[in-house]
Amino acid sequence: MASDAVGNAVWSHVRTTASNTIGLAHLVELLDSAPKDASLSDYTELVVDENLLGRETGAGRQRTLRQLREVFTLDPDYPPFRALRDLWGEDKQGQPLMAGLLAFTRDEFLRDSFSAVRGRHIGETVSSTDLARAVGDAHPNTLSVSTLSKVGRNTASSWRQIGHLSGRALKVRARVQARPSTAAYALYLGHLSGLRGSLLMDSPWTELLDTTPDHVRLLAAEASTLGYLEFRSSGGVDDIGFSHLSRNEPELGK
Figure: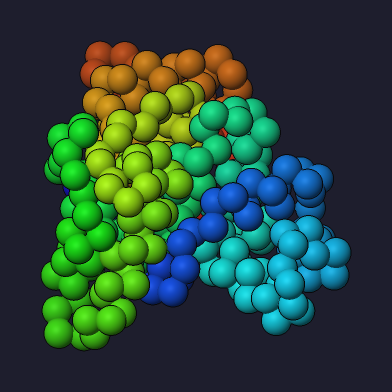
């Protein structure tokens, strides 16, 4: 399902991967060190004032904070980040994919590059050139060769951090393990885009789960027992609620 097939309100168009990776290791260290109810100013203090992430200069601390804010916002008033924060401590193994789902929502070059990842068989090589070409095809005649080269390298590293690629110099397609937490988060992001019911099972976000809509339903049922969402399915009709993650607040763009 193409991203333009769902509501536009949830998509952001930052281009952090033109110069950096998504910075998963920094995000993990920051969220693991901050209280669950931390504010944006709390995260800023940890990164800039306390130098939690070990940057050598003040400018480096500011730059790292800016990159993390671009990709993840670190803003508890932003529903996608708040939901990620709610689920973060529930499942350590699901953290890379949850972070990837948010980065995919925010960074348009990462999003565009997924077409070079999605169709590859497990174990098949995915090069930085393949990823750069996918981004270039989405932005014809607008990006320089040097920019595309950087995008290719950064998106390759980012997809390895998320789990869809493995290997260092030679990267190959890997399968991520969808889990109740990651399924709940993918479904919630689809909900924020305006999708409802069974349409949530086959969205740009559930594509990143590397599984089938039927398996997503099973994971949704498990997520429901864990309290991440409310799920009922009868007669081929799926009914999904998000009172825990949404806290009954308006959807994005509403």
